[in-house]
Image (cartoon, rainbow over the protein chains, first blue to last red):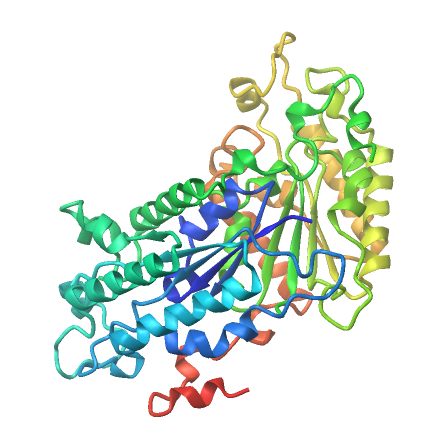
Length: 242
Length: 242
């Protein structure tokens, strides 16, 4: 049975199999080696994620088979909702920064206890284009002020990095890396928060690099059944003997 | 645990999570309800598929959990390689038409015995643009003749439909349906065989329609955890009580 990579996060994960999405791109490059399993929950913050993580990831089955097998990796991609400002129109999704850190620690501990050898890869929230957030409101915005700011997102991104360092696990800092492109607002975001096609490609490539640094890449994984290039045209069925 | 839809087929399935692919599009619309699991094997014909089907789909686990749960559906999408002509450059992938039918029957029987209530959805091979096949050779082609013809693909498509009727299971006839568009060669194919972006959209939409006819659609499936729209902003945690 194939190993798995889980993608756990909010809407930026849930929509990652849409056209050009970073999750679909991962599933594509691992098409013969890994099942990439989507566990994205639009709108969720770390407080809610922590409440449901045990239900999302069922306990391992005590048996010889693969039901209890550890996944190769799990991406943990929360913070964009936690970082909603507490005095603006999406305040109910806000989680205070100290609690965000605690929640990320608790999510990390949950995975580490269940799967000691699984790569746990944090991804920071993306930067925010506040003007675009006003142009694309998700809810009624009577204040006329962006419900998220880039400064707040940056504070949560830094907190995410700090937790990753404390847990000694890898992190993709898209908040910082995206802003290294001066055109980041138009290039990587489509509504000031969610990823454009280029933004999806950016996250995909960063995740691939980080997984590779951790020793996880398609070249090193066993291929599910013989590749066409490895089948002998003169005696194809030889390849399928058990 | 979420139910599954398996995609079992050749390269047109294996590459279905590439940019705009029909598999990724399925995974996207079912993002909170179903795990769409990729089991595509580039170059494979039904003879090889039948040899490996037991290994691809492990026996159900005898336990109370979900390991033995029946998937909601499995797509069976073979024939493009069986239909390689026996006297041309990809002859080693050819499977005679009577054996193709037998193999499809056997694959159907395998799934039906294992999962009596699972929707088994056949997909015919696509039409072939022979001129494009000469422009995009996969192997050395000394004869200068296309290794596949549209006529042969059509015979295999008709055989696939006949098997589906005999098995009383649904079938997507992309060979016929694509050719109803006079521009099918340029619109739906990128190398005379594999699907273009529009071809992927076409297959995706046909599969969605057929699954819906069988009673399987996203609207009818339980959603994994509360949707953001169903969470009470005044008391979000209420939604996460078990």
